[in-house]
Length: 304
Image (cartoon, rainbow, N blue to C red):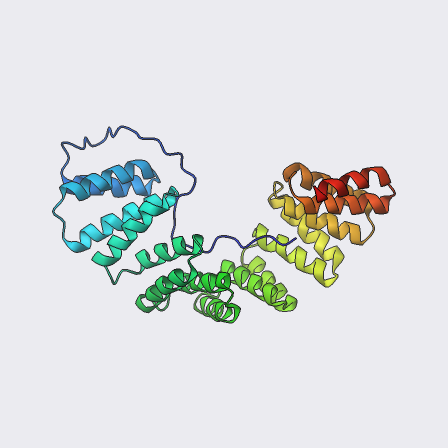
């Protein structure tokens, strides 16, 4: 089982913050002028305190008589904070406003495109990334994100073309190689996928997703010992990932190392007890190991 694509490259955002309203002690909102509030908002954003940054930006926008450029940057920055907190409807509204105020600022298009990609509105995402590309034609991140939208839409050839351009512009872009490998996998070109995983890992030796996926490709190609080695390396880097354990279990099963396969499937099921494929795999391992009673229970659980 191959892992899903990692999140496409994006400007730095903050994820998973617990939303709690707080009291602003450094600058009382009623007394600070709009410029002070804006500067404090940027400082809060820099230290990843998105809740406070949103309050400060909102008050600065309410109070301030800013020109279009400054107001656009404030609204954009607030949108980044909303996106970082997963409040995508408000983030979209802010990016819409920022684009209207700053139509030549590519970052707003990039962020809005990422949200549209998340929402599976791929045509809208592509339009935004194309707008960003026109404004910043040598930014490899834009090509990487545009490729991701094409890939999710199912246009693999255009996706690969844009990944090609991303790595041409930035040959050290490990994630673009990783993402292009996934596109090659979808096309069934295992050797080119393997080559891209090799390149991603050479650039970023602790890239756990790339190592684990390379192990899965080795498994498909029949390189079982290499698959076992890669999955083991992925496990050492991220032991809580059930797919690494399951892929190694399948490789061990293929080379008839049933004891190791059972142990790996057990671990995968501890991490992901609701995955039917892991019960099916463990059932097969138990079948080949001669444990007929237990394998029937696993097969029943997989079906259920």
